Length: 249
Length: 130
Image (cartoon, rainbow over all chains, first blue to last red; front, side, top):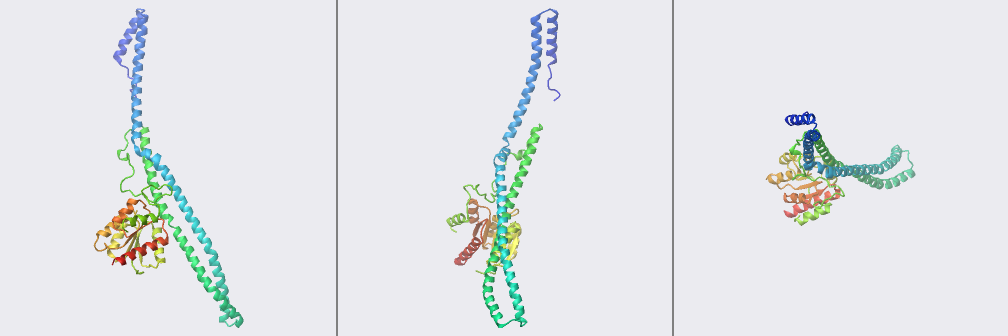
């Protein structure tokens, strides 16, 4: 600001004249009065400038305050995003553990099957080459009688574990949706910060369209986060069934 | 219930489509097709003679509820049974789906048992209604 303190030239000349004449007339009171007026003139200009600055600062603060979106972002959305992301960690962690447990349970079953099949395969080979005594063959058939139902049971167990691994992948759908939402939020925070920087830089115009952008009608709520449920939301499949049956389903 | 019935699975996440496809196969339904959005699913439904639709709600192009409404308003496919499998748990949304004519509503995450129960119930009801 180059024109900060612009003294009134005419007024100053007049006061300077008074000061000069009072000095020459040895009028002490006149000198003090003129000097006080000169410094007063300077001060009132300073006060004007200070007033202008205060007004600008006040306006800037108000613009910032009226931008509800920034407040909502800081107070609600960011803590909300933190909880959502913690839920992502929890879901992915659970899925990884569930998968590992199922795999760890499956491997010994596979190894056991493989081992027993190898033994039977060898014996069967000796039988087909007629290298087996009748006594040994009777033992082999008894072994097979035990092995077959065992194999069916273990194969069924393996299939169940594999289904568990399959089901553990359902986290990706939910976490993907949550992460997409957080990305949208980060994008908004970035835009708000840019506006803040503009304000700080003295550019007081804030993009009007960014103001007061809350939850819009028709916007989908997405997956519920445990501990963050709201009242208008069902807690389980049972609640869904109950609600639907109340509607005649 | 006809195990050979033709089923379309609509979800924007491929993992969820795979899960549903595998669960359906486990239940004996092998005749399934997939689509990643309502907008892509609608022409598939209009072209092929599908017997059952399993759809997500929240999808980028055309949502599941829009797909449901489009199905109900197209006379050639309006009687298609529709099961919604979704993370949307707001009561007003469930009511909206019911009013739009959904046949079943499952919230994610769900179990294989829930899927079986809902499918059985839908077809029991349809057969009973005949």
